[in-house]
Image (tube, rainbow, N blue to C red):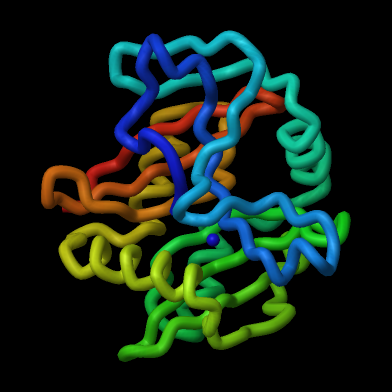
Length: 206
């Protein structure tokens, strides 16, 4: 459902699109999963990037993983926003993303309830919750703790932030959202996709 790189926006030296992903070593052994962890939140694409004045970057992706995600999303009626709503059943959503595991598209939502962190997995076609698992992996717990810290300062929900990002970028759909602290202030990094064009935007949560 944090990452890796320069997460403060694209620069002329970057020349890549940022796509948050969580990388789970245990799950890599079970199959191909398009995810990135908080230490890997970016995917470098060998393609030109267009940087807007607002600092958001869009790219005509040539990477196989991005193309696979774009193809899988064509049959997904369920949105990231609906995934966040589904995650609320298990606690406060602190991040969410579409991902491909073992060739199947799903939505992963990290939630927190008290001091406990869980990953909620939803079916992108029906919206049904497939499973809910307590997060125990050390790296994932670190990611979740950082996300919880950012959300503790937030005055705006992730759902509201995603809605705003989609509204400001007609034709794009949200594929991931990760909260973070920037200069002590809560923000959310939202990755959007339109076809194979990826764009990362930042939304204020305070």
